[in-house]
Length: 323
Length: 254
Image (cartoon, each protein chain N blue to C red):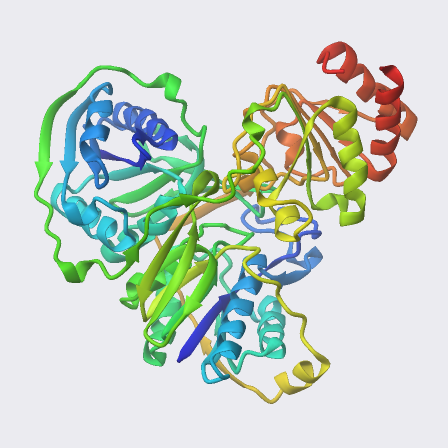
């Protein structure tokens, strides 16, 4: 059996989970297994309703008031119990922050390897090879597994939700959740968003995004001028926010906003995975970086290897002149 | 209170990363090894907790790796203010996450740490699992992606970063293993006094021999470019006029 675990993101199936369903259907057909989809925890009935649209052998629900709110202890215990009972060959999830938070616990509890953040799978006549980005996406590696079972999480877009076969689960199963007070040690408060005064980068048509390659906070006004000349919003990668050069609401990436503008003009950004997942959906990507091996060039439509402090001021001047 | 900080030596951001002749690992001879970025935030968080509760907690910097790459990382931690070090010598560079966590747990178990801090993930293999795996193996509560912590004698309150600008406060009873997000604090530089003092601090060294692991790293390779990328080359004036052409005529955004 292939088991796909759905994650609830504030009332909807997490987009990464939908891609995990696409992965699950593909695994099931390539490797000739049944597919089961698991809805657990928070608002499980909402998840279950939405999961009715997916073709699968089985839809499993795991319901208990103690996992109505997510906790690493609760989720890892329940999923471990389910894996013990059903013995799936592969357990598939999207590589979300929640998965990073609890799935390693399941791996340690059951001594089953967890291959995280997979970008593609080569089914290789039944002995799958899993590709992952390593060394800040400068290289990739292929991993093969010698274990009977495995936990796998996929980076966004490793599988496409467009490939999902619609239909309905053939059977349903309600898993009998066994939890006691001692199982959950942490005390979680409700989730919240900070400062609503932020900028909605997701609505921007043009974005000039800066990375640590701009080298100094003093160079920010130069980048701002470029953005102003095009009527673009300024965004950034995480290091720029960590160094306090720009506020967190300007950040694009897994911990920031996910954008898809008409043009993403990237300046001095190397293209670490955490950043790329937030902008690879852009219609056009133009990247300037002095390092010709920077991974951003792998996803760029236009690649400029050069000194951004020489290029950007001249370009701004030209754009302003052309108006 | 005893706090362990897991740190890892990784190639510096500027290092040239090339696949070596075996096709399975990088050419280490051209790489400068430094402390993994989020690990230095983890160490700073531990040192701040130590200072805020009367210097009573003991901070132990723990690392696993080959001696050549890793010795600098331990010295750096001790120089910044960790009280002692534990070095698990593992010459294999492709040990899988579960095996790495077992090696750590084996050597940390008898220490009975109250808190284990780690960076959220290493910027080399980037599995992002070690802290949570160890937490489970040592029967600790766990949290990841902490961007603020408030430690007390028997519990720690952690502000967790969630996706898309959401956050959550979680209170964990000790012992707890917590992974730290970059940007949580401002890591200090070692003082001259710290660097001199580091030489006298205790360092326990263990030799690790990883058991059979189930994740086998078949090869390392340069990722294929899936997009058709147009290279814009030439002197500055040429580059600028080519970009102008793209913006104006191809994309029509100006």
